Length: 394
Image 1 (cartoon, rainbow, N blue to C red):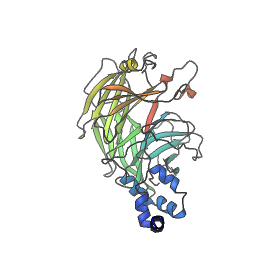
Image 2 (tube, rainbow, N blue to C red; image 1 turned 180 degrees about the vertical axis):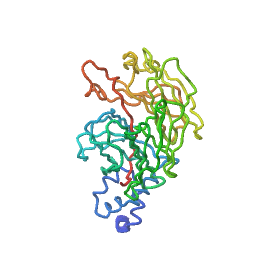
Image 3 (cartoon, one colour; image 1 turned 30 degrees about the vertical axis):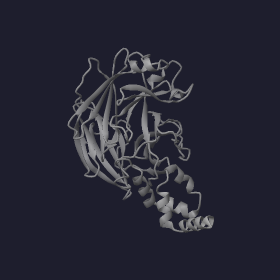
Image 4 (tube, rainbow, N blue to C red; image 1 turned 45 degrees about the horizontal axis):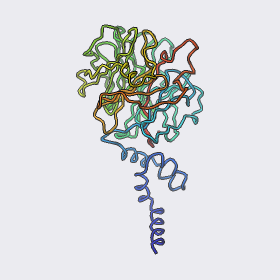
């Protein structure tokens, strides 16, 4: 009798599309990808854009999506699948990009589940690795293609506010260096608004326009002078942001690492020293009034904890290959993630100690395929792209 009642209940649910959708909404993203194969009805429900948006919004934590992995990739054009994966949750697994019919792809930006990629011949792709969906975007015809002029593309996407994404294309005039045009693409209209903004950048205070960071509805760029720029996507206006840092070293800067986590902008600065192991960490105030110095880290302390790390072995170069900041939904403070020699270590601000985040395994050297026999791994620079499992549609 109980078996019969359970069967009847299952039958009622199976034929009630609304009730079935409510149940499926509660399931993890990876399970839903597999469950598309159960039946045509399940595939129809899970593939529906409204369902995908509702699922993404249901699984946020305190107003932010949570990354499940980091993708580490060098700043070069490589086969799409050649990046290293650092899981942030034990079940993390990132689908490789074998479904993209391009031999060479460079990831430019990760933005709340979508990746902005560039192919070798300056064509751009918006990808959702979770669903294996991608769309090719053609840049506007008025954009400069002169190889001497700068050309930068950024992605703005927040599925908790809108299912649509926008692409910001910045091109330098080859007739007037340091003068730029900004074009804006909307996935909602499928078209470009041309030259919405024209602006100039002082060549004595450069801005790194080729690495945009999306945070709180704005695309930010890192500046090396007293000011930088950010673009308010909703209001379509360009504003300035102070870049003066409160702490200065005697040595000149070697490199800046600029990023965000859960609505906060972070900056990490290394210095040009014979043995470069010091790293200053800054956090931007919520009102953009100032950069707040958080701590000066010495990676020599990490070597004390993990003596197998070979840091500081490249003179006048950093003892590591890249930096990023991450926070989980339970954390009020960030973790500073550093990778070197196949080891991923992090400094946890909550406990004030270095920890091993992940070991890529024996013999694995990130990017070593592209280094010569006389080169050292630390000459290569890597970017960390946060990976978010989600069903966002393109």
